[in-house]
Length: 217
Image 1 (tube, rainbow, N blue to C red):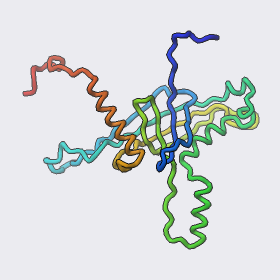
Image 2: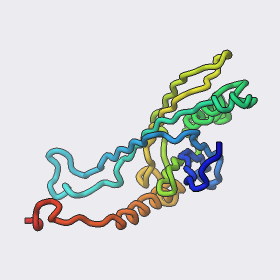
Image 3: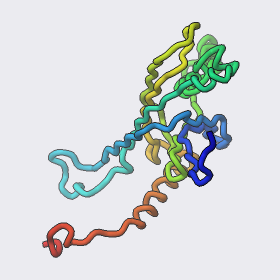
Image 4: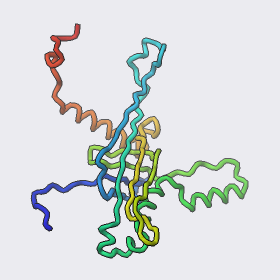
């Protein structure tokens, strides 16, 4: 079946892992199917709470805490139909492993920390992971930390390899309160914020008449 030549090319959302020091791209993970919905929540970080100082009522501590939730589907049916070697042998294990490893330290890091502990090192620094970027069009290139990760495996081949699964990802956007301005992630967040400010200027302002008033009393 041929595709209508005028059909737009549908972009994919995905995740990119980069080295936080050199910005070298380590892995690009394109979602097989784009999620039907992307849920974003912004928690305002105001200065004053209940009974707080009235002079602080309009002040903000910093950017809101933004969280993102997506549910993605992964299916090996097409690969199995053409007898793809990897899908036939291990199903969706490789695709799931790539996503799961985002939240794992590497085996080398674990072994190194164990060696330091065996040598009597008193303080062992937490292991640093690659910087994770959630990409949802060129308007949203966000540094994130995965906070929530669940996998529902829905179908299996005769060897019990998963061949259809749903992956639910919860992410928190990292902003300049988490990363410095000099950090690659901090720079990407500032670009995201500045782009949001530019997009806001393209929205036509409303009129008092639409609100049923002639002005602010």
